[in-house]
Image (cartoon, rainbow, N blue to C red; front, side, top):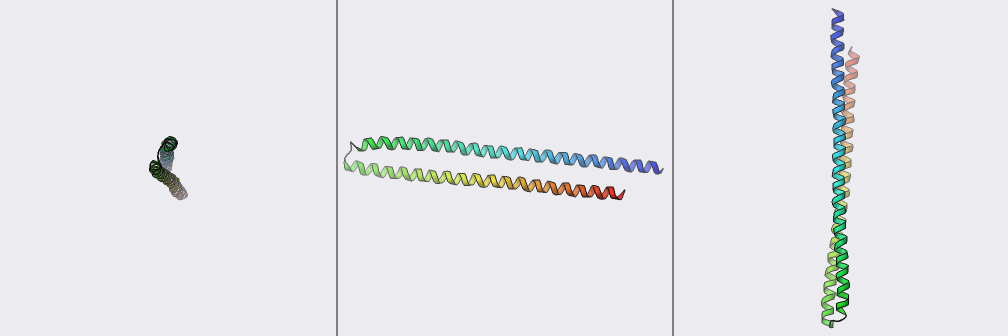
Amino acid sequence: MKDKSNSDELYDVQTENRHLKDIITALRESLEEMKIKNEEIAQEARAAANEEIIQLKETIDALRDEMEKMKFEKAEIVQEARADANDEINQIKAIVGALRDELESNKIMYEEKNQELDRIARDEKDQLKQMIEVLRNRLEKHDAKK
């Protein structure tokens, strides 16, 4: 009868160990999925930022080309037209400055988001470590009771 009880107890412990291992495996897989998702989000953010940088560079190049064209046209225009062209150049500079500010703002937001994602990943990793430690302690207590 005692052998039957020990055998049942051993079976229960082995079953619980398998269950805990399954939980740990699931948690590891979940952590990996979260890491992959975070990396995908970061890559998408980088891609979006790079796309915007490319567009802004093209805009700046187009604005520079336009400014050069205007420079040649100004030589043929009377003083009044020069004043108008200078006003337009100032507007373009303001647009470039605004675009530069927006680019810097987007860069800062991207960096903050990336830091937030890193922080979240660290927090989740720490939580998982704590959960594993709690489960390990429970298992050790359970093993100690035997």
